[in-house]
Length: 139
Figure 1: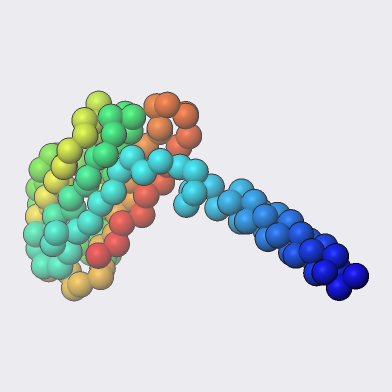
Figure 2: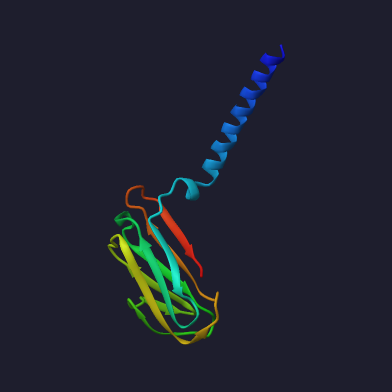
């Protein structure tokens, strides 16, 4: 009798564990289902020269929209590639038809910024799934 009850309890526990795993998987689609198309890191994130390095893992990223956010009062002197727009500490790039590899965005600012005061956001649409992806990058 004990053996049968232990088997029923074990089966019930496995069932609930599987259900919990399924719920967690559905609740975190970005972490479990989305392919990683683009990654990034700051090579330089303080001072007047800021360098953001993007690692494009798949041409399925299509086009990239890159925003970089700088502290108030800082303006952009120049950037490579040239930014489409700079307004109130926010720079924007539209990078079309990206290919796998590394892309660097270098920015020269009007004054130095302390460490941790810059961040980036990369948006792209997965050409295979149609899903819009947002990637946050901080130093």
